Length: 588
Ligand code: ATP
Ligand code: MG
Image (cartoon, rainbow, N blue to C red):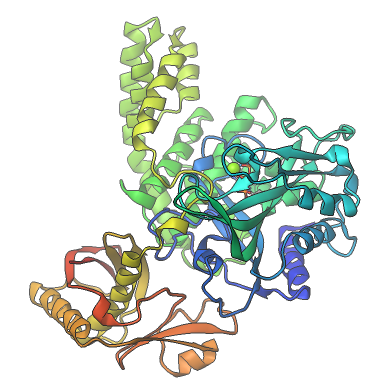
């Protein structure tokens, strides 16, 4: 089965069960301060999972491109990627465990749909937590699986680390999940399910949000119980084609082939080469998609992640003796994903940026090699501190340092390296780490206020700069500030900035109500609402109106009246590439 067919079937199946398809949105989250990237399909749905009404109803589904930087160290195995596509279906207070599991099982096994071998499926459920939360074992889910014909030996109960979803240590919705695994080995399927056996690969996860964790760490049943599922396209595609390695599927193979051609090495030559090729193939794809969504290599936020990805590609390419190669191995990405028009449209830009970053990094890499040579001449064993410096400042992965050291007859103090790295990570770890534990706790009042201010700011820019072609190109809001990117070609003058601020503050003083309306995208367009109309909206959208000067398609949330906002102040303006400007502003 091909990728496109898998995606088409998934959407078709869930549509036949009353779900509406929602768009595959940008990798860069809008209005979510807590994460750099969209890490799962549920991401743009956080507000709706918290109870806000969705314009398309209570049953939703889609395919969503994702980036998980938290998995970057796993890349090199057969089934973890930094970029992957996730299929998802959601119940917003509609169906719950029984129906969700029944649908999952039908889609996986029915001949009409995926027709996967029932005998190769295994399940994990939540074992319960008597100590802290008093939450019982999820026998309800396991019973449904058994009623579908999954034998007891193939159902295992695991703890919070594996089968619990929720904002750890914080408040908010949470609940148990049940995960589906598939046996990907050519060997005979073992009778019992052992989740530590890597040949059992997790392909799908059904999360049941049924509790609300209160500030006293009590778990109260939620009024609106949700289902949030996620199924990996790459892993499922491998399962469907009896492959034990995602890199052998059509979404990676053409890139691997290209690397083989350019390096003259074979993918299966030895595990080192295999891993190196996997990392290159994974990271080049992720880099292309991140650039396609408007990010450029830099030293902060998304740009820094992008930079690291490209640099790792170059370093690993070096190991295979490839030079000036990034754009060559990026080429197949555009063929594999020919359905992503934004990727196609940005091809020239993507290639240009890859080439530029590769050239630039080559210089750093050379400096790193000089540093390395000095270390080798001075030591029998390279200290961990220095290995970490090579890693941190020159982008040398430890495997590469070890290999180079070996070639030079010296060793590396790897334990000390690990210790250094751990110390460093402790310092840089943010609250956003962990699997999509994001967003939920942070949709605060202040974020809402800044979000409404962003609408006012856009209206002000169009008004003061007398240019109705000014559009929003992206926004990001933290509880501290708002950031708005918009199309405009020059720097604003001091006077213009002042005028914009004044205009916004006037609208705040006028105490204007913020009105939410529901309509079709066609109607919204007719009424002149701002939005990106080449994006697939559903057949219903929300439009937020402020006075007669601001009308935007937007999922919300917003304050009820502009008088709630406080004093608006612009703190910074920047250029963000061709034809776009960025403004950061606060509310005092
Ligand atoms: P794992 O434990 O294998 O890392 P996970 O528990 O992190 O998986 P979820 O967060 O439940 O996975 O995501 C839902 C689905 O998305 C998974 O069942 C899997 O099919 C897919 N998925 C998750 N992370 C990745 C990844 N890094 N690369 C490819 N697919 C992934
Ligand atoms: Mg994971």
